[in-house]
Every structure is written in structure tokens, then in C-alpha cells.
Image 1 (cartoon, rainbow, N blue to C red):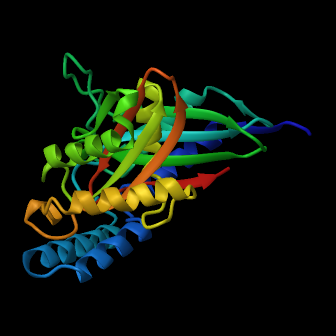
Image 2 (cartoon, one colour):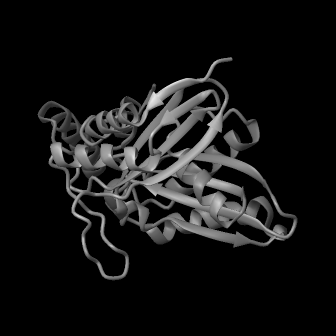
Length: 279
């Protein structure tokens, strides 16, 4: 098969368009989940969910962010092995992010970790690349707010902790988080791999359609059990009490070393923002 060339400029333009969209256009699956949750609530909890849906609608109509925290730019690239990108991939991604946050008038929240000096353009982005079959590039853009990100955690459990220990760790993360991640939340969970790979799995799991069923029957059952246990904490929307603190739990699993049982939990608030395309 011949190699297909894709210019860095094309990649940059795609990233640019995705972040302009993701920061202001709510995902339909998230809106559907919010509406389903609203139908199960009453009183203040139902009103909170109604206002969240209304806010998301206004954001799309006015092309303004539904939340002032337009996050740190997370970019996933699935690059076909028969694609050659002519140019610097990292620079192209950062250029797209830079221009999107400038032209969209989105808050620029990225700064040096220790000195706390703002970079001025919301770069650098967090970039994850993997090689897949084909001659296309699939791009996901996720503007990740850090009110929920700060509640995320990785636990290096003992193998003897087993499934029960994994579940207890995840539920305890939710209990500690309380209202801080602006619930209702979606939880991405990574189980297995290594310290850093479990976190990667957890964050990427947030890209899955809210309400979709896990293709692994074991994990699908575990997701249901965890959501029920977490919602039983009674925190509800925005921590005001109710039945719907957690809209969904998305789990991904990977083999791990016999001496460990890594578990990562990635929180995302009700503004679960992402967009994707293929070039």
C-alpha cells in the first residue's frame, strides 16, 4: 500500500476546529444523560439539572463556553501506519490549540508548574499518540477542566485486594471528592497496566459515549454496580442531595504485573467536553 501524506498544517487546522467546537458545543450524549437524570429527581436537584441543560444550550447558541474553565488541551491522535505527516506533529497540535483559544476568546489557564507563570496561549497541550492500522488520522480534542481533574487519583493496590478492593477504592475516591468536581460527574476508570498507563486508560475512557454499554460483560456489570454504590452516597447534583451524583462509570482494563493492581479514577464534571474527526 502506498503511503498517504498529511501536512502538519492540515493537522493544525483540524485541531483548531475541534477545540473551537468542543469548548462551546455540548455533546449530545451528555445532554441526554442530564435529561434522564432530571426525570429521576425532584426539588432542588431537578432544578439544578434543568439549569445545567439550559446553560449548555445557551453556550451553543451564543458560541460562548458553558464554563469559564476551558481547561487544559488534551489531544489524542490515532495515526494510521500508512500515513506520513510532513512536519512537526507536536508543533502542529500546539499551533491549533493556540489559535483556537485565541480566536474563541477562551480562558488561557496553562502556566509553569512551580513558578506559576502563564504561558499566555494555553499551550503546551497534552498529546497522546498511538499507531493504528490504515491511512487516516483520528483526532480527539478534550478541553479538560481542572476542578474535576483535581479529584482524580491513582492507587497502587495489592493483588490480594481483588475486585472488592478496586470497587472500594473507586467509591472512596467519589466519597472524598464530594461536591468539588461539579457533579453530576462521569468517571473514567483504568485498571491494570502500570502507574502511568492506568491513568491514561482512565482519561481516555471519558471519550466513550455516555450511556453506552461496555463491550466486556464483566466490566459492564462492574460499571453498573459502581454507579449505584456511588449514587447511594446521596451527594446528588452539585452536592445538594439527590439520586444522580454520577451519570456513568466507564472502565477500561489492561494486563498488569503479578505484583500489583493499579487503579486510576479520572473525574469529569457535567461539562464533559470533547470533539473528534478523521483526516
